[in-house]
Each structure stands twice: as structure tokens, then as C-alpha cells.
Length: 276
Ligand SMILES: Nc1ncnc2c1ncn2[C@@H]1O[C@H](COP(=O)(O)OP(=O)(O)OP(=O)(O)O)[C@@H](O)[C@H]1O
Picture (cartoon, rainbow, N blue to C red):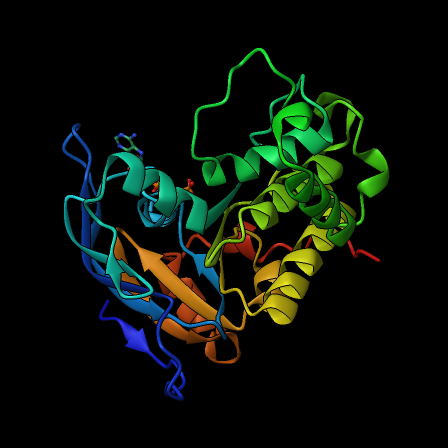
């Protein structure tokens, strides 16, 4: 299936992310990405779709450099980040915010401390593990973290342990932690897969609001096509390690979805219960 590109013409906006001919081969021999190319601008709220195993998570993990690409380039605001290591890699991970399905919070820390973890890469010197994060950060970082919590609507939970929160609340903490990083781009790998429909809508609304108010591009992997249709401005369709669709969600018709999902899209189309 050849890539079908229906992306609107760029209007002079410089790409925030540029991916050129990206290949990722795992040591097992599986080639999860087979030459993927696309650009992301500040206007983009992108949803990545495709069958299980199509390469969606691998793509996001390469973009924030949790994985090192085998070949190809990833440019972040024009800077090639595909092979950086050490301190430069830490800086890249600060600039690329990542939200995971399982939240990835530190359970025994408070909500505020988890958000402050998003500021860790702003520190020049290592922080002793024995100290409370809230005690070692400068006042301006604390105030910033509280503002991030307010932006996601849970500042009243600041001093509660992360493991006492509901899934939806934990994902809000993860989003606040990403905001604390002041990222250039936000990636979210199945951020609503562990949530009930109401919390899922709340999390997606939050991501959309952050995108619209701050002009930060967002790339999200989603499985439920009803959410894809509600939230995507642009869709990347992946199949077997290749990009096979790049265009607006309005042009993603059933026949094309069938082709992207190789005829196994029944569950993906399944509507979730209506949410408020
Ligand atoms: N750590 C790994 N080692 C070896 N192979 C891997 C690894 N992670 C993923 N793969 C393989 O790479 C391919 C792409 O996997 P990936 O997780 O990126 O797909 P996906 O589209 O995100 O799937 P899902 O929707 O199920 O999460 C699959 O064949 C998978 O088995």
C-alpha cells in the first residue's frame, strides 16, 4: 500500500519535528520502522493509527529517543537528535514530553514531587536521592509545578501520594509533569487505554486544550477510532512499519481504515459508551 498523503500545504510554519527515512531494527531482527518520513508543525494534533505491531510505539519511542534509530534522521527544531547521547540526550528528553499508558509516576512520591521530576533536567547538579524533591527545588520551580497542576485541574491533590489517585487523576499528574518540562512537542503512547470513557475524554480534552492554548504539537497513539475521529486534526496511518496514510481525519474513510487495519478493524471501530 503506497503512502497516501493528503496533508494540507504548509503555510510557512517551520517544522517542530522532521522525520526522514526513519528505520528501526531491533536486535531480535524485527524491523519495526521501514523508512518513515513526515513533518510536524505547531498546528498539528496528530493521531497515529494502525494494527497492533504496526510500529506506532516504536515511532514515538524513537522520537523521544528512548530508542536509538537504526538509520534515518529526526530533527527537533532543525537539530539532528537521532544519534545524540549523554547530556545532549537528557536535554532532548526534556524537550520531548512523553505520556504513557501506565502513567509512569513514582508511586510513593507526592503529586507535587512527581511534577517536580519534570524539572529535574533543568538542574545543573545531581540531586541527592535522600532529599525530598519539594525541599531542594528553588521556589520558582515549586511555583511553576503548582501552576502546572492548576492547569490540569488538580492543584488540590498536590500533597497526596501518587498511588492514592484514580487512573484519570494519575494521567493528569503525568500531563502536569510534561508541562513542567516546557516541551517543544508532546508524545502520548495510548494515554487513554487504561481509563474509563469519561476519564479518557477528560484526558483527550486536556491534551487538545494544551495544544490549542500553548501551540505545542501533539502526537498520540490511539486504538479507538471513535476517539480518533473526535480529536485528530491529522492522522498518520501505519501498516507493517510503513506510513500508509498522512492526511486530515475528514478524509479517513471506512474503506481506507479497512486497508490500514488490513480488514481487521471491527474492534477498532467499536464505539465506546457515550461520555459526558
Ligand atoms: N523491544 C522489542 N524487541 C523486539 N521487537 C520489538 C520490540 N518492541 C516492539 N517490537 C516489535 O516491533 C514491531 C512493532 O511494535 P510496536 O510496539 O512499535 O507496534 P505498535 O503499533 O505500537 O503495536 P501496539 O498497538 O500493539 O502497541 C512488532 O513486530 C513488535 O513485536
